[in-house]
View 1 (spheres, one colour):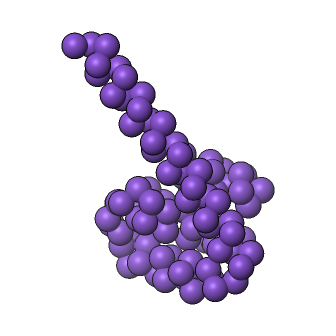
View 2: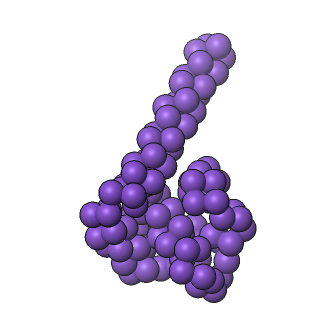
View 3: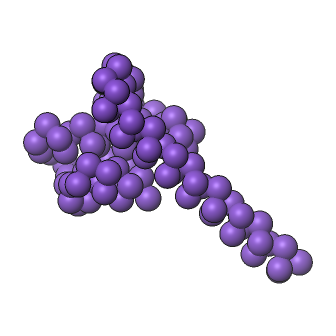
Length: 106
């Protein structure tokens, strides 16, 4: 969900975000936003956030620092905020679905 949301927000192909190599600067930054959101929005550890993209925890930590620094730009901050809001909405919807299913199974 993170990759799809970030790729859509930045108008990039989803499969590029998971590539083993760095790719272009826009793709690398999209991947950094994805790792940042995995860590900040989903609450994953840096190790978990990096592993999704075949990166280590130090790369995920670097990604988080880069995104935080670039959020000083209003345009970048608006994009990241929108992605965070969409992911939060998705998490809320999934939690509601889980609870509904659990309640109906009881």
